Length: 171
Image (cartoon, rainbow, N blue to C red; front, side, top):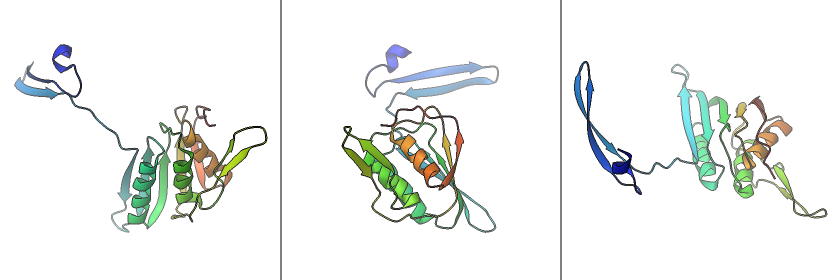
């Protein structure tokens, strides 16, 4: 079976599964699966229409910023936000600043120390687009600029952090 499905984005195999309840034909196709940099789930209260927005970040990028910004604009009557950074990573400081800015506005998000005398402060350019309460989920798989986002939520008391210590790989 592995030989049939090997190769780049190719391979099809037809199988017949046998079980006590009968036979079933199954077609297996190998294809590439690409995850979005962020996923958003809105859980609405049927009576009020307001709800909770669950944001799962896989990679902090401009694409993730766009996805989350669009969701925040669409669902503006939120009682809370769950920001899941448990498996998030990233190395784009500008995208991380834009992302943080959606929640904390024009506050310094991180400082990058280039040399002993050279330090750059990263500040988002716009105002926060939501003031809904936020719970930030983090774990030892939260890496890079995602750690800086969690730290900014803590520093500015913008959300409650829940989880385990992060990977410790922020620059």
